[in-house]
Picture 1 (tube, rainbow, N blue to C red):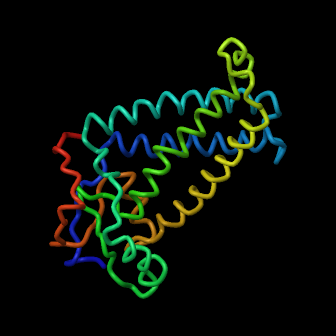
Picture 2: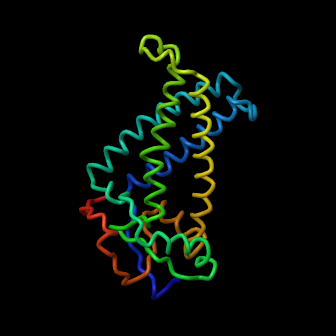
Picture 3: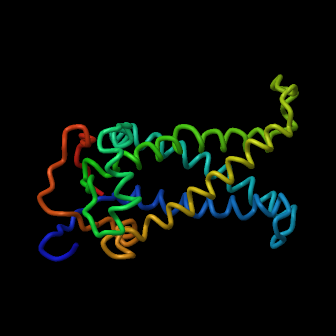
Length: 220
């Protein structure tokens, strides 16, 4: 789809784009150093990998707090409200329709950036997987303080298993996410949009009430 059937809109603000790429770098760095700590390879050396992993994790934790503050103060949290409406149409599209050149059943709009499947995925990440990963990582890092906090009864091995399982889940999401960026009307359309903020969408597509985030326009 291109040309007369498409419309160029400013979809992603500067902060959204900055946070997307900044968090991506942090996550890749955490995965690389984390797997080195567990002995998957040797690049930085164990001690350096631990230091880089720890400081990167703390940076991610602080940055994530700013992100949460941003989505609630701007109203963008409404973009993540889960819904089952058109969920099966979206799943069918990714399994079958996309390979037949069909149009997306829930096209992007400024007030409806995420389709139902994306909403459920991103909400699960932001509200469950990432907080658990940060919490287990922080507790792992602060193990020597557990006695003073009264939580020395918690098995360190259990914390390690949960943290490692979360890392593999995030790695799996990263692979799928990278693949999904190639499914636009051109292979680099979604990547370009996350760099410039502008994305081509289908013209004159109605946004239904359940899709709307009702986000007030803001400069950026």
